[in-house]
Image (tube, rainbow, N blue to C red; front, side, top):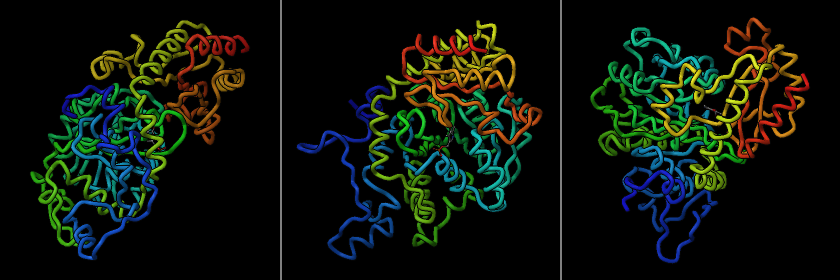
Length: 429
Ligand SMILES: *Cc1c(COP(=O)(O)O)cnc(C)c1O
């Protein structure tokens, strides 16, 4: 069966690596920093990108490439790479095509770490960001673009706001302005949503979350669709469309085509210079997670749906945010983009504010208090006393995080145990 045609479940299990006669069934961990060659001439060809092969694990490693190839197949992309973290993936996805003096438009409801990366650290590098509401009108979205805009960015399901992005609307605006749409697909995973099918050009992941799924390794991934025609806007993307003097005058779009240019440049330049490589051992663990991703995601979503429905009916709960509830403003959009479910994370408010939320969380026995989501073990966080601790109640409201908000990430346990645990904790307040 051709690799493009097989179904997502089969890609999760078998994608990225097909052993030949007598080779290991499981992907080998190539725990080697370097690779041996017979002649300097052979090695020279690798450095010139004239031949493909490995020479130093800071740039590329065979184990990582097998796992990247699986994620590429899952997302329906043309090329992919692993990074050391989701932060590195999002940084590279933008810095590969934007530099000092450039501008990027981003959804405002994005992961807090990404928001800091964009609004503080990348701003120091001279890249300016305009943030727009994911629910903005087409007019508002179009008005955010400038002549020096190089990309549009958003999250399929935002962490922690749980807003759902209208990927088609965002893709249309990006393409009308001749820039790619970059989508962080961490929360939905390719099992529930494949952003490239809705018009996204580049997809990023924090593989730390559902893809790993067992809280074992921090990692990230970037997938290129190969569909964005950089050469049509060659003036805007000189890094991809004009010779790279640091790589012997190679022009990435000419040498590697639209399908390979973006990832090859990110590997040859950004990995070479920043070195945010994933360790081969973590890539191996990530692959174990990917083998069961399709089975786990289904259960995460079933548990979250049951928990959200229970909470919505409980009189000690002030609100529930979950796109799988018909009362959610994102219900219809989520049904279209993610007909099989959204994610396992639910957020809700406990009546009685900050004190009640803290008391509730302290009374939970099955769910653990952690700064993590998308794990096999149910975990929860009270942002007002953890990630957003420095803010007072008014500042919290402005940030869209109320003092009573609990972020609850449903694991793979029995849903009745989760619900009974929540019920007994609510009884105590
Ligand atoms: C966690 C997360 C990140 C950052 O990933 P790390 O692997 O922690 O660096 C980026 N985007 C989203 C949506 C996340 O949830």
